[in-house]
Length: 101
Image 1 (tube, rainbow, N blue to C red):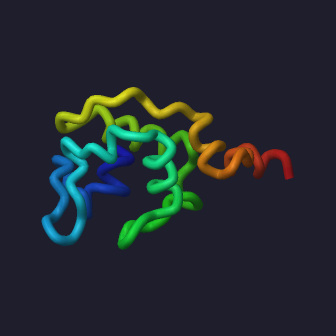
Image 2: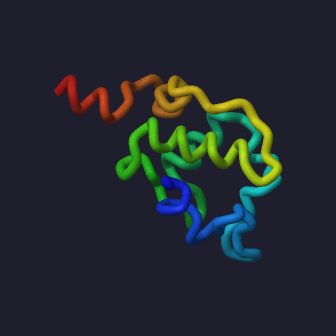
C-alpha cells in the first residue's frame, strides 16, 4: 500500500502521528479541507515533510490523499486528477510531460 510505504513511518499506520514531531492525519481539518492545499503539501513537502513531486506520480499521490481523506474519521470528497495540474500552475503532469519530450 502506498500510504504504508510513504507516510506511515511518520504519520503512523492509524494516522495518529507522533506528538511534537509529526501531525496526526486522523480527524484532521487540514486533510479534509482545500484539496489544492493538500495536493501542494504532498507535492512540495512542508516543514519536515519531504516533497513527493519527483518520487510519486500524480495518480499515486491522489490515491494516498484519497485514502487519508476517507480514513480514521476523515470524510472528504476525493481529490481530482486536475488538482495536481492546478497545483503546478497549470503544467502537464510529470508522466505526461515525459511522453511529450
